[in-house]
Each structure stands twice: as structure tokens, then as C-alpha cells.
Image (cartoon, rainbow, N blue to C red; front, side):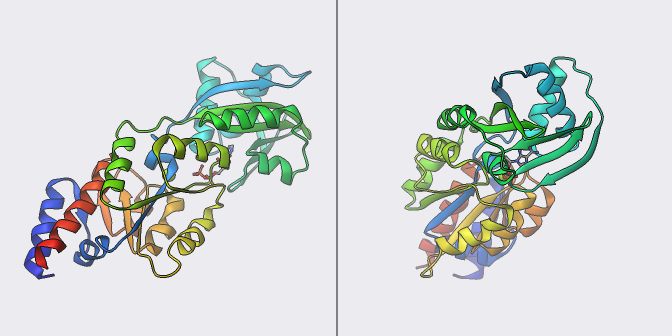
Length: 292
Ligand code: ADP
Ligand code: MG
């Protein structure tokens, strides 16, 4: 590639809100055969809402929600914010919380009114040896709808199953289709529940799913995907995406995402719209084709 054609390509991309931070990213992108995307905040809006609940015998939903919202008030996770908003919508006064711990990739734990409270994925409950009984089947059904099931345990007993739903961005579906048309294999990497991830992938026509990945597991998932030397691009928005953005042959950050992700990326999209990813590939392929 000539320096001039790369400058022209980079300039055209910038006009479309796609910032190549280095010229070689434009060159490398056209060699990529796989594009892997983070789910939450990349394929989806990243602002889940609490949509469903099921309450255990002997528990009252409002009491459980009040306790859960109090615990989640300390967490920055989008799931936590959804639970807090649900309680605020009911004008609830939240109790005091002690001994808050975030168990990354699993959920949260704290003490409320002397009771031990756990909120998180089924693997948190498995880890803490809390039987989910009928809740597991309900959670699995919610996952099949593309919602994220979560469980709340109080003093070692499963008290409720709840679900949050994070809408897919309106442009995601057409962007995935366009990436396929450009000859790319599309993969999704997420910390979310396997069933939820599968449902969303099926809806979007995504080829490959890696789910229930712990925060430090995204890099390992990428290494697995590029075994044999296949070049790949990774698209993400969060703090937990930074290592994957740095590891990928081309890291593409959503500009509406966190600064840490933007810092780690080779390409930055000015908007949250995934058509920016399509444009990045398109311009890269055209620029390199003109040179040959
Ligand atoms: P992601 O960003 O893909 O959601 P995380 O590692 O942040 O990945 O979270 C993985 C899973 O851990 C979530 O889907 C959820 O089940 C659980 N989890 C994480 N944080 C919380 C929280 N504050 N409250 C409840 N569950 C949580
Ligand atoms: Mg994300």
C-alpha cells in the first residue's frame, strides 16, 4: 500500500466517523477473516431493564426487590442499575448495606438487616451451594427469550429469580448481515448466560458464540479463534474489553464506550452504531484493492 492511498482511505473513513489511529490498522483490517464482538453495549444498548420476576414461597417480591436494590446500589454494573431503577420506580426506601463484595463475573454479595444476600448468575448460586430448584427451569426459559436470568438468595435460600432484558441496537442486525456479505465470520464473546447468548446470536445470525466468559477469559477466547493464524478484529466498549482490544489484530472501540477501551483500540467509532464497523472493513478492503 502506498502512503498516499492509506492517507486517502484514512481520511475517507474519518469523514464517516471511523477513526484509524494507525495506518497499518487499515491494512491489517482487510486481512481479518473473523470479527468478534462483545455483546453488552456493543450488539445491545447496554441499558438493561428489569422485566420479569418469580418469587419463592414465604418471600414477598417488594421486600426482596428492596433488599436487592440496596445491595446493587453499590455496584456499577448495568444489571445493578436496572435493579436499582426498578426499586426507584416503586419509590422504595432502601435499607443499609454492610460488607458489600463484588464477585467479578458471578454477581454480588452483602449483608442487609443481618441477612446474607447474594445476587447473580446461576454459577454464583452453584458456587455458594444454594439449590435453585424450580427457579433454574424458569431462568432457563427466560434465557431462551434472550433475557438474562439472575437469582437472589437470602440467608442461603433462593428467594427469587429475576430477568433483565437489554435491547439489541436497531442497526445491529443489518450490520451483521453486511459483515457476512463482506465475507467475514461473525463471533460473539460475552460474560452473559449461555442460553441468553445463544438466543441473541440466533436472532442476529451470528456464527459462533463464546458465553459465560470470565472477565480475563476474553483474550483466551480470541486466541482460540485465531488458532492457525487467522487474523481477527475485536469490537468492544467496556473496561473488561480493553485486553481483548489490545490482543486482537485490529481492536475496534465503540466511541460511546469507556475511555479504557478507546485507549486500547486501533480504530475508534464515533457512534455506537455497528455500521461503523462495516464501513471500517469496507474502506480497508477498497483501499487495499485499489493498490493491487
Ligand atoms: P458482561 O459484561 O458480559 O455482563 P460480566 O463479567 O460483567 O460480563 O458479568 C457476567 C455475569 O455476572 C452477568 O451476566 C451476571 O449474571 C453476573 N453479574 C455481574 N455483575 C453483577 C451484578 N452487579 N449483579 C448481579 N449479577 C451480576
Ligand atoms: Mg460491553
